[in-house]
Image 1: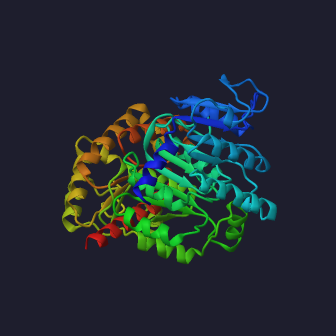
Image 2: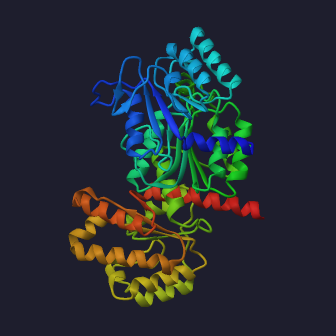
Length: 480
C-alpha cells in the first residue's frame, strides 16, 4: 500500500463529517434500523464532527437536521453510509460524486453475493462510478467502521475507551460478536472494520493500514476468503515480525466454503494450505472466536514464552495426568524439573499429600508465609521451565478461605509475576458446584488490571500458550 493511501484511510476512521442515508424518524426500540444505529453509535462515541441524516421526508432524526438527499447537505462530507436497498444505491452514489465525498460505506447487501445478474451489474456500475471519481468504498454487505478515537461505531453499546487491538473482518456479524466478547475480557480497540465483499478496499489494504497505525499494537481478523491471497500473505510476513497477528478463518471445509461464497462472495481455501501459509508468514491461525479473543488477550497481557516447556501448578492425582496429556496434545511439553529445583522444593513442601514433580501439587503450603515467592524463584531459575500454568479454582478457594483467602491469593499472584519473570498463565475456573460467579468475575478483573492473562479452562489455556510459543519460534527463526 502506498503512503498516500495510508494517509487517505486515516480519514475513513477519523472523518470530519458523516451522512447516513436510510436513517428513519420512526421510533426504533428494537434497533432494527441500522442507519439509526450508526447515528446512535456515533453519539455514544462522542463524534466531534457533524452528523447528517438523509431521508426524503423527515425534518429531523435523533435530534439532527435531516436532508432529502446527500447533495442537499450544505457542508462537506467525508463519509457517507448507505443503509438503503440495493436498488436505490446508484442514485445515492451519483449524489456522492456531485458532493465530492471521500468514502462510501455500503452497508447494503444483495449485490454480487446474490448471484443475480442485474445486481451484479448494478454493483459493477457503483464501483466504476466511484473509481472514476476518486471515491473509496468499504463493502458492500458489511457493518463498516468502529473507531472510538474517531467517534464512530456501528452499534450504540460498544466501549468508548480506545485500546491497542486492531481488527478487520469479512463478516459484520463476526465483527460485532468479536467486539462484545473481547470487550467482556477487558480488551479495547484502536480500529475495527467489517469490509464485506471488498469490491474496492480489500483485506490487505486494512492489514497494511493497521500495520502502520501507531495506535494498533496487536492485529486480529476474521476472514472467509481472499481475492488476492498472495498480496495478503506477503504483507503479513513483513508485519508479523513487528506486530502479532491472529486470524480466525472460516470456509476451510467444503460446506463452510459454500457458505462463505453465498455470504460475502468470498473465495475460500483448504485448511491444510491455509495453515501452511500461516506458519510461513508468522500468522497465528485459530479455530474459533473464543480462541481469537483469548489469544489477543494473552498477547496483550503476558510475554511470549521462550519455549514450550510448561510447569503446571495445581495438578493433583488423575488431574495431573489428564492436564499433561492435554498440554502435550497441543504441542507443549511438561518436563521434569531440574534436580536442584526438586531438592529445593522438598525443603519447602512436605512430602505427605503433595508432589514436587511436574505438575506440582503443593496443596495449601504455598499460602504459608514466604513459600510462594520461594517456589516462583526456583521456577524462574530452572532452565527446564519456559512458562507457568497456574490452576486457580477461585470459587472453591472462596468456600474454604473466604474473601480473606481470595484476597491473599490475588495479592500473592499479582506480586508473583514480578518474581517469576516468565509467562504466568492463570486458569481461573468457575467450579459450578461452588457458585461464586461474582467472586470469579472480580478476580478476573483484578488480574486483568494487573496485566495478567486469564483463561476459563485448562484446554483453552494450553492451546493459546502453544500458539504463542509457535509465534516466538517464528520470531527466533527470523532473527537466525
